[in-house]
Length: 358
Image 1: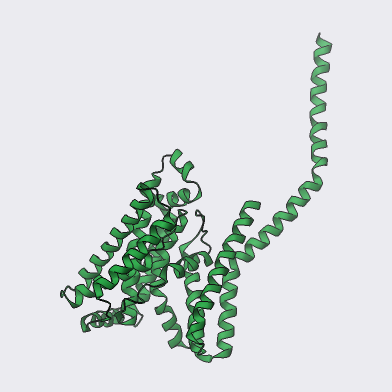
Image 2: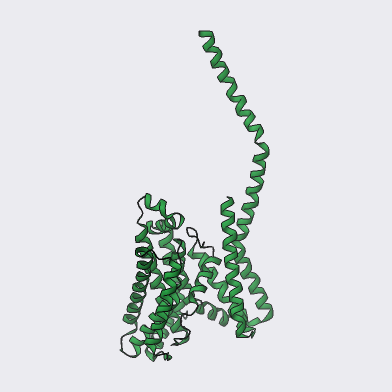
């Protein structure tokens, strides 16, 4: 019995390493293939991560070679200032996309908020700061209504926000009676005083960057940001670990609505009036495109505000700015915008295919 036991032990002792060695030898070719494939994927991912930076450099080089005005100090300031409204709107949109949802109503929310803002100042003699706070709160309420449709009534976010977009656009015309409303001297005076306080920089630029940095810090360094990412990755798993998915979704839509309202005010301040036919028009598509170009996934769970969304906004506005300097026919702008949107969608699809392979 002892001999039999020793023999059994010896068999186990020596047969295990042999089997293990065979497994290793049989998987050498497979391991090499995996290593080569992983290196290729890393190179492709690295290229995709920095492709937008390369495109911006190429774009700037082409525009500057065609018109020296493109990189002039005045044009750069104009480009950055004109990017402020879209940057604020895209910051809010980034949060919505991060949880795997979408908001097509932000352009109309921006229109309603800017109309209320300028009406309070011009018709009701409300000071600029209280009027701004009221308009931002209105945007938050409209975002909350979106969340009710999505969270409570279980309506698809695409359909819910598209309906809200059409509904609110009508209110823009009601508030303004379909007429343009110009800014008052009081608003211009506040804008001038803020500009002097910021050492000659546009207050729109300063505020938009501050908001972008603030929400970036919230996303990166708070439990709320981690929960947003978790919800975007997997809603069901997030519920199982105790995350209030409904609450996170509601809060994200409120944030998006408030940022859209602020973007509408910025746009109004930048152009000097509220025009009901174009205030906030197309803002949702530009915001989504900027987010996706900056690396935010349409399926949620992945993305950054800075530098991602910020770089996407700069890229988008640089295209139109350069086209304007070159004197390109305005009717060609929608064609270019459509091509850029397709580029963003293709980029997102390609990145998702890489993640699936991974």
